[in-house]
Image (cartoon, rainbow, N blue to C red; front, side, top):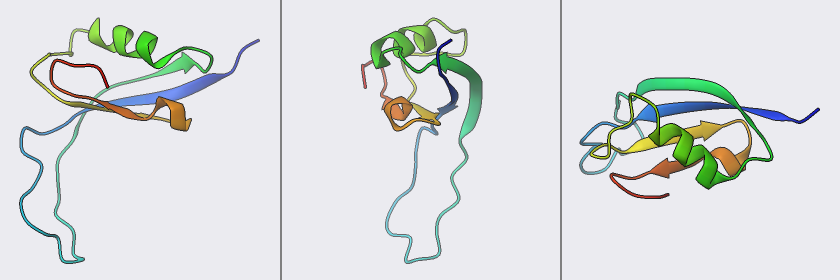
Length: 82
């Protein structure tokens, strides 16, 4: 049996924010586009390929991947590898 990691994928907004927050914070809306379990022994490149094969993926958008394990937390920038 192998360990699995829960992964969430968010599409980032086109514009995040401007200026400083000054301790109060600035609300930003992320679009949750997917969640799934992935094998913990998989590689980041395998996970990126899997995500890029999904219907929601678009090369003109940034995506934030948050996994329950630190190795599965990263950004997929527009059109590129993380």
